[in-house]
Image 1 (cartoon, rainbow, N blue to C red):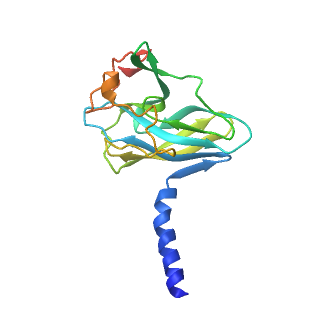
Image 2 (image 1 turned 30 degrees about the vertical axis):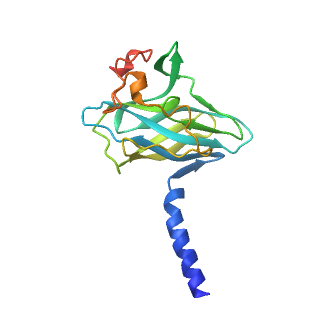
Length: 187
């Protein structure tokens, strides 16, 4: 019986880190918010996560605040006649009732513009997500390795997982300046 209790305690202890990087407010859960490590020259980076709405009413991610960059915006990457372009989504991202929305490369994501310093693997950065109905949710972005690829529930590569090379970005930075993003906030 003691052996079983110790085994259960160890299993619970090692299960905590996987669940410990989720954040909840009301019916919304944000799973594993992360950014990829950047070079010292990078002025911008992207933030990614999965947001699940377990409620019966839709909500909307309308903003992000933090202290580690000059500006935070919700962006969408779109294919315009074979050219990938990013633009700010001022209306935010709808999180439909009973569904999950993945903010990922090549789709919706959060842009950190005017970084205070390079993002190094293993570091964490606090931010606040702002939802239309649920209000503010403090979260922590974990900095993953530059080549980090999240696991997807269906086991396949999501449409948003593409190399920055396909968008005219080099793999050494998340600097999005000058790539047709629809506004001048990236300079």
